[in-house]
Length: 428
Image (cartoon, rainbow, N blue to C red; front, side):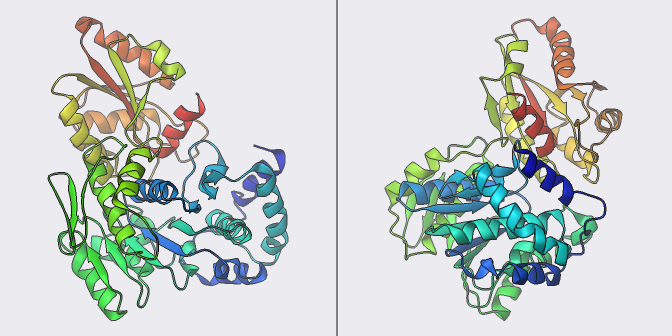
């Protein structure tokens, strides 16, 4: 990362910068100063939800590119470098381009305060407006209704992935309040794809919002379904073959196909879809690490996996995969978490499958939970655990713990936070 980019990002994270107030007014003023780049974007697919947003965008991205279309994409957070957030025509934005855009928006930030996310979203809109593309895949950062990305007045399509309890300090302390915030991306007359919803209160609320805006819905279980790993609708029947690991990826892949179906102006065949699903890449979501320095610390019978799930629903998804693996392999965890997350509820999902857990602090993250706090939370839900000063030490501790099971196939899964996952990937 260049000095200019690093200094600019540090400026945005300064305590004197604006705090989160969940309002679009400040974002609108900032964009107006910049000439309203959000009005000069390619057609937009706007995605909200608690889990699965990134995977959904990764599948759509791969499908569009397989069909020959140019794709812009905006996601958060980044894992290793900032430029991961902004893809221009399918490639990470170049440092020189980021520097140019940051210089461009700096004077505007002197006129209008903004949060970190508002400022970088404005920067992304400037970047997207300057380079042509056929589609822009846009992920919300927090919520939906008052998220900085929700200044897009007329997207081509909206999509809502599974909604669960997360960011309750900003979005509300009930599933209804959180769903109402996510539903805020639904726009008048714009089709909306709805993925699987595990809380019975969510779908009726989304349907009510859509009806009030005359927004056509394309819902899992009604207009489309998943049956025997096939995506089935009135017009398509496609065997799902997602590249990403975990049973939940069949849902994400199917939701991507549902989105494609709602954009008939693009010429995308079943073969484009099948190939695209196999080409999708999304790091730190049940990612098997095979060529990483940490792998060299492990005996050959131990696999190393990485997962960034960090809320109770993420824990449930990880637990389902661990339950399948535990039939033939011992399961060990290295876990670090951010403050504000429900540690006990996350770890409770994993408890039936974990032999042992080593907790770590997420270095250089001010909001990291102390390793001791994570270990105590694990112990409170029945997981034998201890705290370690580093990931390397955690791996060594687990190896010592497994010596009584020599040659026993095992998995070590590093989990609990995307920020921790980023540190692991950066170490490669």
